[in-house]
Length: 159
Image 1 (cartoon, rainbow, N blue to C red):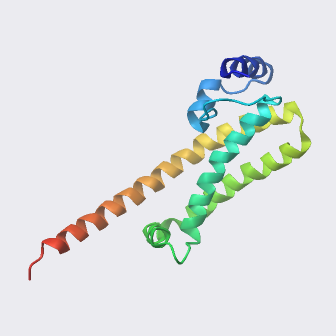
Image 2: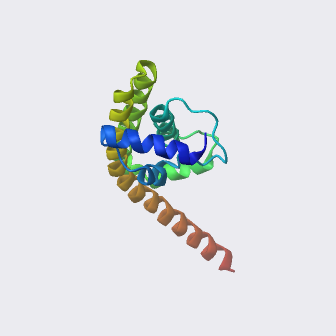
Image 3: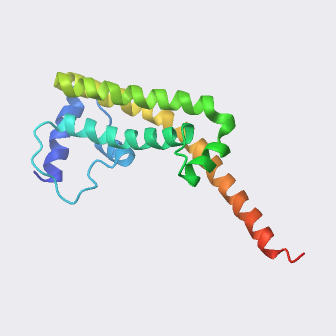
């Protein structure tokens, strides 16, 4: 199946279920990052799984901040950077895990209308979560930059 064929099938389902535009979903969840597509029988299920791939990556990232691996200096440092944001991170993680849990249920149920419902639900929820993630990631980047400036000052000291 070509990407164009998949887009056409999705467009029919989009109109039927009032789903987000393909372009918007692809922009957020990189639906087709692979060069080619194998045979896809369940278009909405495929999109649901791609959404959850991305959601799962962010959930793993937040989990690493909340519960850093003791052998990962990066996780430990970023956990310290966001110490005051732990409650916000827990809330975001709960929301991300809710999305993945619903996806697991949809995988088991295999009903087109429920797949469509999931795509709408997760897309709307993601757009809100994304704003919070941007805030946290900018904070982490800012803290790393401050650490780098501290290191640069130490290197210049000849005392």
